[in-house]
Length: 133
Ligand code: ATP
Image (cartoon, rainbow, N blue to C red; front, top):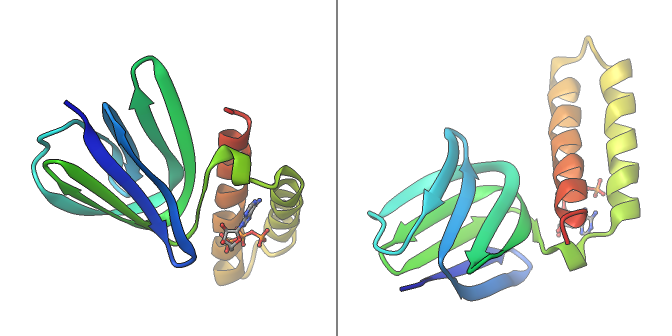
């Protein structure tokens, strides 16, 4: 038995397929979902969605949003999501560098610091997912 997973962003659908298991990073931690899971909705943080099929695991980089779980269907509504093949590594490296510089120079401004920290997490997550192809 499999579970259907779709990953949707404001720009369109990034993934739609049947998998054996999917895991997502919620704000409370990693959540592994098998078919017939109880229904729930949970907020997501920056992280990788792992799609397990047999012995293979595909990853999708997700930058926040929500997961909606139904017994036969998981919908991930993401602010941004990319498959490894859709990640521009140079762009993520540049974004990471910029964020690190802002963290170094903006230590006193809490809002700028938090924004830079989130940008750093998005860029690092993209680099992790891109390197897993
Ligand atoms: P950047 O500073 O490079 O714009 P960001 O983390 O601020 O990065 P987001 O606001 O998360 O970017 O995303 C904006 C849009 O750009 C989304 O559609 C996202 O999928 C896309 N995107 C961002 N970074 C990359 C990347 N490295 N490769 C491919 N698409 C990306």
